[in-house]
Length: 119
View 1: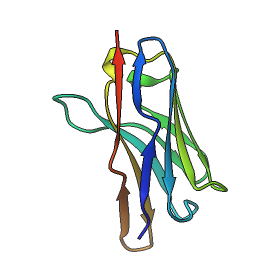
View 2: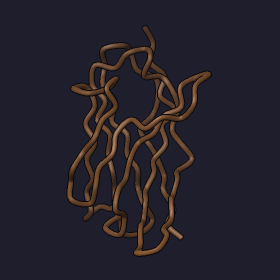
View 3: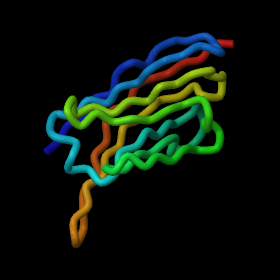
View 4: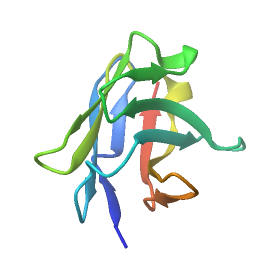
């Protein structure tokens, strides 16, 4: 069972930057896709950014041009570089990893890290 642990959250001023990390207890090369989700106060969890094993990325419209997702297989870590943050970026950010087989698969989740953007 792979464990995912997020870090890097905290309090940041609007317009500032933050980098989130998601460290896996095992190899992330096994994961077809990895992603960052967030749950803003009073809202449902949503996908913020995703990255495939081949390095293809996808972003929610609300963060395009401001956030960058990346993964380092050698370090078994995924990152989310957050620039020009806005108050609406406040929320708990969760790391997700999807392992898919010919039939079925597994989803792994971290416990989340809180990001608070002050205006």
